[in-house]
Length: 364
Image (tube, rainbow, N blue to C red; front, side, top):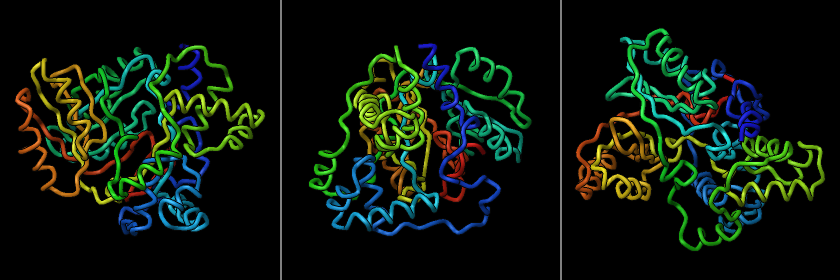
């Protein structure tokens, strides 16, 4: 286990690897840049990739009623414009000794963005955003070592200029993660066809006994979730047949889960919130499972702290959020209270910098 975590330290830290796709640094993106807009064909492609991120272009084209060359050009364009990227989501036990944490930070007046920017430069912070609500900044923390997490919480983060206080909740279990969120554009027949070509996934197995080639394959798949066996073979200097077995083993065991990285606002969901829910002990699991099935859910977790369940969701508008708060949550008598933080500006999501709806280099 220790070998796996040590070898993956550079994966866990975007400050230690260089993006192979030429993403621009933050300073290269104008604060006044016109937000990008996706057309219907773009949105259909994103929806298809969310179901089957590694599907061959021919399969995507057949489902979408297009040609493989057209789909390929569209996918390339979205990547070159830094709007979309298929990455590999690595299971938590391969990244660290413990689970992630939710962190809310109160800042001095006028210091929210500067504090968020400094937090986004820490390799242990995969997500950071400015917010309105209970605090000024929300982020997640996922340190490789428990000792490092303690150092960050007790010394490093409180010492960031502008930080006034911080509140932390430890994730005990996730009932859904971002890889499961879907843009609902495809019909049932299209979804079934895509699932037939998607990589089968089983529950993650124990993270033990990995060799150097397997660990390097994890790193390659994390950077490019559509990497083929030929790509892995070239990157690792091994035979294509060995690379294929390595790749399929990691994917089928659920240790790496390919997913689409794209800003929800580009998909018609500009309103993003983090909701802390307080529930009676007997209702916690039921509430978390139900919220995991809600169409807004990107990340739902059971936590240890002052709250019970954290719901990170996205909505098309304020009416959608109002429906969740006033109607959907009202169905659970075990919920006693909730607090809502509305996301204003996302600076980093899954260790990838963001600005104006575009993906930036991981080495910001």
